Length: 151
Image 1 (tube, rainbow, N blue to C red):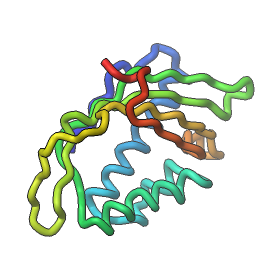
Image 2: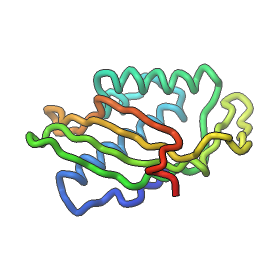
Image 3: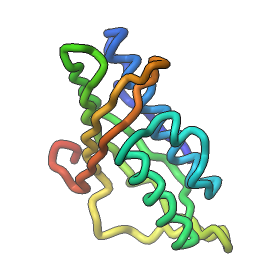
Image 4: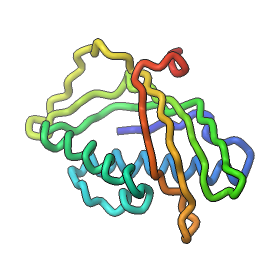
């Protein structure tokens, strides 16, 4: 599995720190899915609150279906808005999953059947800086097929 981050450097040190931790959160989630481990340490490092329980449920759904994935997901068009206290921020970004495929854990077979759903997903996240300076995701929503991400 490969994650590509396009345009994830803004030139603003504070925003780039937020984006670095959001990208690490995405990587830790994918790693947990690939390893089949809902208690992977990266999850509690980069998630908190409802977002952590949501991530564990997301990973568990893959495990229940005996699935993993392979291919490439491209993450693009990030927009960071820092709150005035600079300890919370919102991050909007898009993903293109058109080159990512489900993979059966038991057989290793990759399902390349074209999906009838849009491969584009808009993510809206809230991140909070913890006492160690890590930007943890505390809320995350997604909308598949959002026009803001198509194309």
